[in-house]
Every structure is written in structure tokens, then in C-alpha cells.
Amino acid sequence: MTELPGIVITGGSGRMGQMLINTVLNSDKAKLVGVVDRAGHDWVGQDIGVAMGGAAVGVTVTDDPVQVFAQAQAVIDFTSPAATVEFAGLAAQARAVHVIGTTGLTEDDIAAIGRAARHTRIVRAGNMSLGVNLLVKLTQMVAEALDDDFDIEVIEAHHHHKVDAPSGTALMLGEAAAKGRGVNLNDVSDSGRDGITGARTKGDIGFSAIRGGDIVGEHDVLFAAAGERIVLRHLATDRAIFARGAVKAALWGLDKDPGEYDMFDVLGL
Figure 1: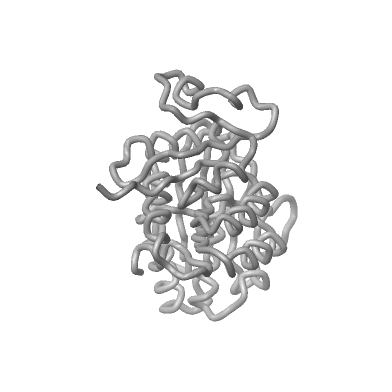
Figure 2: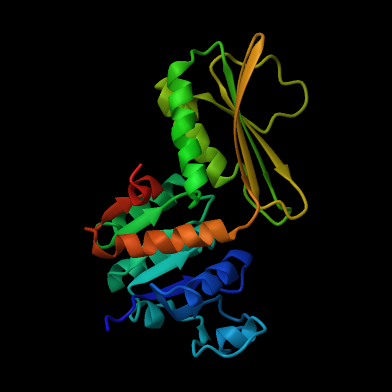
């Protein structure tokens, strides 16, 4: 029988980390071989199953990524920008597929990840769900079809624990709209409005962020002109969709050449 590919989850104690762990444990296509958490966390040294309130599964949480990455074929990483950059280098050394769902990355972070991709396969996306990636494609298509008489606003809502804004998915949608219009998002982005801002600049792509409660993720792309509006919408009600997409990406990347990929590649879009 063919050995199942081994996957390591980083940030195991986080909300997304626990979802990823359960998804891999319940998969018949991969096995959990490691869980990484930050040094000093209470879970380090415990069996991950016990730490999560269940039965032991034979995988001990560690704060040493080097050791467990060496045993893995893939690493799934929804942590912080600084941690992700470090993990990218270590995954490259281990030649493990690195699936990155971390948001809030700077241009310098992305450049560092790009250097790591010379040596391994990196799949990076602001959102791992099929529906969102279809929404991104639709946003680009609509932006291509409409002129700048239509104002574009990306409206996103997430739970009150989320620390970055706009969300990674909102930025994906903004990038898609900008690509459809043939412009650079950095040149036309309009976010963080407060006070007397003046009239909206024609051609800008706006962002509005809502934070509250336990909202998993809601994204609208509004195209608004005089007398009419078009709204594209995606609602996520269960973060398991992101975990399933991340595991799919990890398995997809196993036989690919080193380089940077995204969910469009994984889904054949």
C-alpha cells in the first residue's frame, strides 16, 4: 500500500490551525506528521489530540519546525507574516510543499517567499475556497466589461479576532478588479476613509472592512453607477472550506516543479 503523504500544520493552537489538524486527521489522502506552535505555548510537548480535548493521536506539538519539516511532504501555514517567511525558508530546505494562507504579507515578505520558491513548491492565496476563487475571476471579467463610470467597492466582514484589514481575500478581489481595468491597485486603492474625505476619485477601487462577532467571512464586490448597481457576493459559513482547500493545494503540489502557485493553478482556473 502506498504511504500517505505527511503534512505538518503550523500555528496548531489557533482557530484555523485546529481546523486544519482535524481536516488532515479525517483525510484518507494524507496523514498528520507534525504540529508546530510558538515556543512557550502550553500545548508544546503535548499530544495534539489531547491538547485539543480529545484522544491521543500520536503526534506531539513542537516548537522546533526544522525537525518535523524534515519528516513532511507538505507544510500548511496560516500564521503570521514573520513566522511564514521563516517557515518558507525551512520548507524550502526540506523540499516540502508550502501552502500559505497567511494574510497581511508585505512586499518584502512576498519577495522572501519568492526566493524560497526557487527550491520548492509554494502555493499562496489569500483565500483557499473554490467559491472565492471563482468570485475573483468573475470580478476581473466584470471590471473588464465596465468602464470607470462604475465605482468599485470591495466590502468585507470578518470576526472580531481578525487583526488585519483589508482582508487577504478583499485584496485578491481588488487586484482582480484592477487587472480587469488594466491599472495598478496601489495607484487606485482607497481605504480607511474617515472624516471629511472629499468626493470619491473616479476610477478608484475602494475597500470597506467590518469586524464583529464570529463572522467567518463575507465579501461583496459592488459596481455602482448612476441608476444601477451590480453586486457579486460570497458568504462563508464554515472555515472548513478553507482547510479543505489548503489540503487540496498541498496534495496538488506534490508532483509539481519548484515555483510559486496559487489556487487558480490548483483548481485549473
